[in-house]
Amino acid sequence: MIKLHNTLSGKLEEFKPIKAGEARMYHCGPTVYDYAHIGNLRSYVFADLLRRTFEFSGYEVTQVVNITDIGHLTSDADTGDDKMVKGLKRENLPLTLEGLKELADKYEKAFKDDLVALNIERPQHFPRATAYLTQEIALIKTLEEKGYAYKLADGLYFDTGRLKSYGRLGGLTPMSESQARVGGAEKKSPRDFVLWKLSADNHLGFHSPWGTGFPGWHIECSAMSRALLHQPFDVHTGGVDHIPVHHNNEIAQSEAAYDTPLANFWLHNEFVTVAAPSTELGVNKMAKSEGNFITLKALQEKGFSPLAYRYFLLMAHYRTPVTFSWEALEAASNAFEKLKRFVGPLSAINEVDEAYKAKFKEKIENDLNTAQALAVLWTLVKDKEVTPENKLATLLDFDKVLGLGLK
Image 1 (cartoon, rainbow, N blue to C red):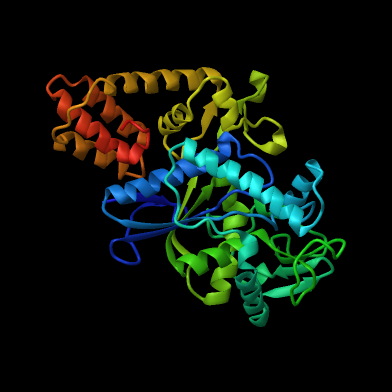
Image 2: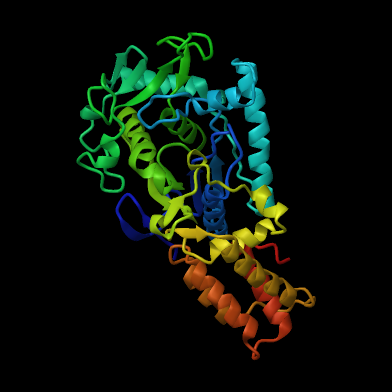
């Protein structure tokens, strides 16, 4: 029995699929204007772990990781440059749709290369936001027809005052400080958010009933998840930073439009932080805006395997913040190399040790507790009562979930 911590209820709940034997999942993907950093990549290691756990327990999984290639503004207040436009300017690419595609192609490939390096199973769907404009515009039209949208000079906005349940994800009702910070002077409420943003120069963008521009970041995810997984679907994941704004906005517009939940389970992984230069400052979230981000390529250039970083992440529960340091990564790498050295000489495979498998399954099905699952793994390695042949069979069975490439 798989139990997951549902952010929507704030409780550990037994996973009950909408359709027996199936698990349909949507994961908020990257905005492809720059390289992903190792903090970003924690979300996809977590999503892969969830998928592997479902498959380990016999579920057929359908998985979607979206690609945001327009519409993600630099500020949650719906102001500032689109991040893709920021990328165009940084790389001196033309401010055209062709330039956007060139930028998106480059960084989508880099992102997918990172997934391969981390042994992340390929999702069935990698939808691009610009490929779902028809569905996004249709969703906005539905919201407008139902009275949930209003116009401002710079675009069309969702009226959160019309939805009494707004902000319930993460217990953010009534308005919290984190939501109040995203206000705009002309909005009816600081929490209202853009559905369609008009282009500043009426040049870079797409045609719509509201003028040339682009869909809001939130509307893109609602449209793509509904198109590929139907509504409701089983699980929606992302980082904890998505809870206050992005995911609450997804829920609001999807439920307002279609009068049904968007997803039954909402799961969120914690940040990867980096030690600040001064101990008085503690730790900081890894982010491009902070200038403290580290890419997977940077780890490799220092001689670390991407799978050593995966092992580093598995040492902590996904809902626990982890502090990255080169010393911590080296310790994880040493443990990972020790495991590989143990497995390396083993060749004959006999039977999976069912007692150890039951212990491992108990830990992993309890909200994906990888730290405790690794403890079971090391106990098995040291257990002299289990034959080498059975150890190998059991370790390879565990690795179907852990994804450390032991085979």
